[in-house]
Image (cartoon, helix red, strand yellow):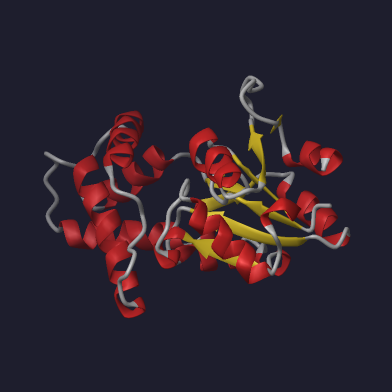
Length: 228
């Protein structure tokens, strides 16, 4: 019997308004640097995959906000390597704040109805995301926090997906056994492999993509509600 459902955040419940490349380009232009959005998008993808996990095991809680900031600063510096800013620190600070605002993100249309339906059934709900402390304000601004009993962020948990410990940490907060829980997300490696390793049932969310033969998959969250 399913007692709890965990969700990835970005790419599953909501997405960047427009695109990362467009957002970066807009903020950069305000600081005097012009780079086409598609170029930034390509650089971002390459830089993101080269970064270490967004997790800081063993670090004191008082240090975590700074470490999150520095992690993203390193990524953005890589994206804009070779570009000349009059004040890179001012630019990066504005960019970091931009993505802390819920206005930078948009909910998928199926998110609220699906969460409401699952909550009505009595399931405990949680978020497990490779994100930082800004996720709380984003979820609050998007009207999501009322649905969730726990929101676990890799930067605060000390583990990043696909490490099974981050899923177990969420389930411990919910007091639910892995066998009685499911996780849904848009990454085969981070979400499906990680959740499966932790003992949960895993669903791959394939929005606008071909069905996967490697895992249970759904095309949207409405389908998930119907099949759970």
